[in-house]
Length: 146
Image (cartoon, rainbow, N blue to C red):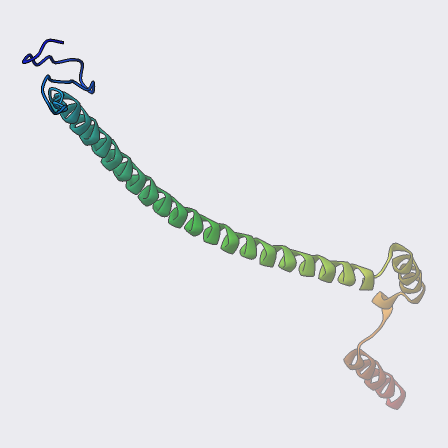
């Protein structure tokens, strides 16, 4: 290098000047303004996306809560319906058991056959009432007394 001349190199390189003392001449300033505006734009986009995601999450949470309440109400309704059905089934079982007991207590065909034979043997149609017997007795006394 020639004395008295200052040369500039690539940014970050050390540049020497002629003279008694060696001085480092600062490199030309690098322009970062485009990078900063690009980063700022990216940051705003990311913040907007974050805000949109938070809004969506809020809506999803609201939907989930309302659906949860709706499902709980449906479950309660179904449980009450099931309890009613259980009660009705128990009532039907009780009535069926009652019918079975009554049928067991009723007369069987064989018992009815025996009763029929006794009735035919006795001939209750020929039975007389108390008043008829008294009238017959009165008539019999009258015939004798005449």
